[in-house]
Length: 93
Image (cartoon, rainbow, N blue to C red):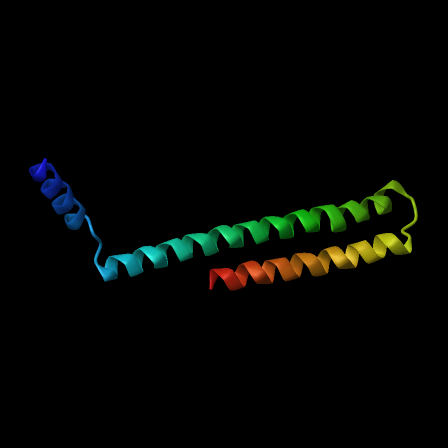
């Protein structure tokens, strides 16, 4: 029984990471998290551009008139896409 416990403690102590390895692991996880968040914000930018901007250009091709709401959504879509892209760029830096 005692020999088993000694072996278990020795194996646990041998697997302990050095502080440098722990710092490297934390840095790697932070970079991965930032990369994932930046992809998320880029996808949101693409969705807002597609839905608000391209969706409101369709009345021009149908021959119907553009009303004020379409113009406002067009501008808001462009601003939203730019802001989300800037957030994603900032996360990648």
